[in-house]
Length: 103
Image (cartoon, rainbow, N blue to C red):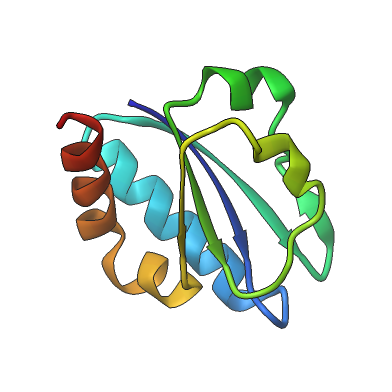
């Protein structure tokens, strides 16, 4: 599966990057490709390209605040979760996504 994600927390620092790391680790552990864009105090980092968005199977929005450039994601399947879910149970989240996409 080809996953893209955006992480953004209210302060834009610690939780944004913790969620990025846990999502990346969980996806790779389960054999998936993932790219995670962060939006926070330093702006957008690792910005997703339109090509990456078009080629993705699913978008994970692990956000607590509004995100910039959200219109890029209008036509893609998405899951929106609290950032704490990505940090605490990224593996369970990826597993649920696998099950939903393979129904």
